[in-house]
Image (cartoon, rainbow, N blue to C red):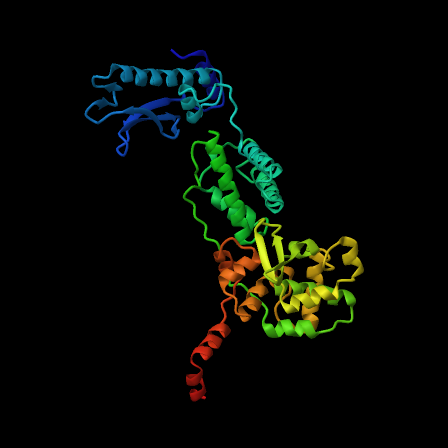
Length: 423
């Protein structure tokens, strides 16, 4: 005999000319070979929840999965049978009340992990909660200003994706996520629609990985469908200016006074390795004398890592040039630095006028510093200290351009006689 809810749904299906299939719930138990622990599996309408351990140990000889019987263990036998009956009862209750028949929800209610009416955050809500957590970390100085700004951008991009992209939406749940998210998010949205470069799209994808792990930790999700997804990061060989190009910029005098100022700030970054944000706020409190060497001692704005940079003669000359500069005195800084956008616009013009092949921008100066310091004989480890890198690997991967010139010079030093004889 059909219950009232099933009868009503059957009648509605007949009126639409369809066949109504009553929902089904299947519960099974099995022993994991690796641990010897009995696990629970719940399948509703063909959809399976993640297997969950019951914490009961058994062997194939002592456990009958068909009758849920453990040999000589009536207590755990009763536990398994009670668990199964509870799952079937909860399934029937939710079916009669037209609530979600998600097998994960039914399983968790039976295990006491949640209540009937407890709401699991949607993906969009979880993104907001994850961002709130980072904002709290920012307020307690655990996260830098640059990092929280990036996270806010990633948050807005992911929120738009899950709200607007086809087959997703504001009410999309973690249980609905599949590995296809990689193609929808990275290829379909970030790279095709937003036109982001591969590496930037990868950063946002990695940020979402963090959201998933956060959701699993809070039991909003019980699996990570993109755990095994691997997207390779693209690496380009760093590009730097040459000593000849630095000398050309240094000696070129522009008609516009502002062009000369921008050129000097750019060269100062080439001689010190300072990033734009660090040179913009450079002041007398960042100068110090260490063992008789006048230096810049400054915590990097991005990472908080201490940078120790000896003031090379080329950099010292530029600082002396702006000691009495009106704008520097008003702002209490050492150099007249304009906004990053304006700097980059001026640098494009300066590079074209001076005949520099490489397109100039503020970050190119920081990379050029590795070439400059290498020409002066500094090693990669020493460069990392001057650039404020915690690990020389960062310097090697992203800033240091491999060049033949130091190798040739070293060879000529070691084997000068052989070189002379070959000539």
